[in-house]
Length: 545
Ligand code: F6P
Image 1: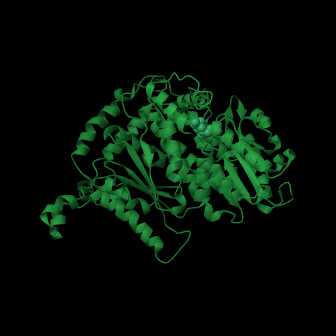
Image 2: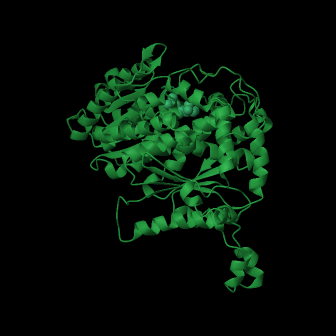
Image 3: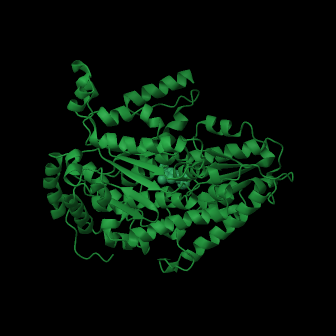
């Protein structure tokens, strides 16, 4: 790391202290006044980069807030940490790993070294292998064991080995090859597998077993079930090679499962699961949209990487987004961030961002193990607009919680239909406006509302939102949007001083489940040594299963 001076604990940094005092000033004013005082605010608090427009003017901030947040980022060593990430330093310290998802989309001309080895040529070797495989499936050249072409592609994976692929498939469905069926099986609940395969013909089906570790209980259970389902059709064991591929870092276990390592698409320990959708884990995406479109998506990621690495923080989209999240989380006690894409294809984007953000920044200690004394990762959630408006927006508008919102929309419709798109986009602008400016009691009274209803019809306003706009949802734009959030998460994690790239918090539940599995056998009726609640629940299940 280029950082030489020890960085003071977050709450001791001068910018943090200044932000604490400054937050009180901001709480004493509101967005109505901030806009009235500065008629150019909407123009000034807007950044455009790489074809993404961010209007952040409807945030509870002033130029001073931004100055202090940027100072906080600088004092937290954001630049140095960013360089450390991009140059392959082992910034995931609790696992002793580099964090190089940026290498997955680096052009072949670049060189990024981990332990002295340039990883970029390896990345491109795998991309080439994926390209050839995807082309053969798409063209029908790859046939199943009976000579029929592959019609169905089923990705079996969970977490990062599922959420990225399924989100990207849904987001880019417009560009997908429509004579191929794509399904995604993740849950260990047998229903997921059964429903995904019930109408499929095994001889026309290709399974992609996606697992970084190739040990994940859900994925391995589903992969074995898939194998049984396939063989039950009368296919010989030797046919597995034509119907199963593995996306993994674990060559040994892939071989032991019986998948031909020729059909294995590798990646590396420096790719975190939730940062892996543009690695071999993206094979289903590449088959769906084709290698060229996949390359465009990678180019989108890369454009945002370069922007994040090189642009001054004042104009830096991911840094601004991340710092605004720190602002509300730590100085306004906001618990959540709502992700509201106004695009039906983006319906899985909030779920994808949940893992990206919450597995990354849901941490309670800093890199050196000190308990934090401030809030870290907020809860991300959301649904596409306009559907959410008819469900949970009531609480955002009139509830007692502050919920910063990210609205995401596109200038052009992929499926132009009458005036649908204008209606859709009018709703983004209207929602952001209503949240910010609300409706005063005077306005409500002036409408002739009965006095006893006035309080109910008042919208306090002063509720913050970002509006992110782009030309249209295409592979390149999707890449940019994902990288925008990846680096926003990084920015937040650097300020909070946490390891955004480990996930120890998922381990305990996994270990306990492994212990409980044999205890559920009613016949064996093993003695139970849990707490009284867990013992009772297991007993209840045993006697009713
Ligand atoms: O349990 C959490 C997790 O480790 C995620 O971080 C990861 O994306 C997911 O499980 C799946 O892991 P794998 O790709 O190794 O099967």
